[in-house]
Image (cartoon, rainbow, N blue to C red; front, side, top):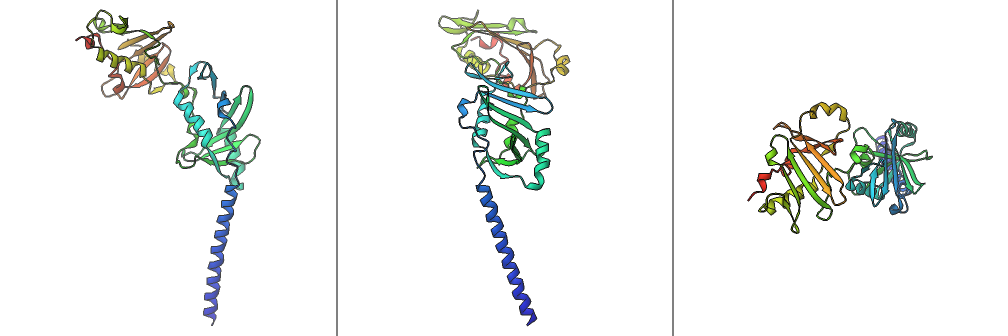
Length: 311
């Protein structure tokens, strides 16, 4: 008799636990659904013309829309693809759930001390002000509005991505990686000089309604066009922050130098320095100032000599 009673009590307990779990889940789902999905979005992205990312360490990045393009810290053109990713992130990001009460104080402190303070402007008016912090494994991201005591775990629905990555970029990483960025309409001339092989130097200019190699009237136009396309599309793999530590590595003479002049007579240069055969990357100096790494396999199409265009 007692055994049957115990069995009934056990069954009742299991039912109660199951019902409690279901109610808790539904309650949590209900709370999640009540989170404002527009919490970190701006009403009109197209009106945003300035964005500031700032960390407690003092590192600051400012993106500003000037002359039809985004500029980094007032002096470098921004990578268009990264800007597109940023605005796509801001458009799609949603708060998944508020952080549990017991973690809020510590996470708020971490957001202030280690996070990125993000401000979006329309002209001089701040239209969105929040902080961003990712976890150590770069798998989760937390947002917290300014003056709001509640941090939120955020996600982009349908994607398993680290949302915080685009907010962690330095000024150099925001910079447009295209070196010359010319096209057939704004390109005037190009010269290529080899320090160790001056006989292989050449210049390309507009001749008889076509671009040609000066002094080579029968130049191979297919190879020349392929070369010009490769130069116009050339991108750095990565800009180098600590430039001073690398100066000794480029005291030797460049392997070759490319000099480009556009129709507005603006000059662009790229000095490429020799690399060992086993090296994956090659160091270059852009416009005599910025050091960058280039993938050696990409430079094969660039390192053309005068003799390469002879028929």
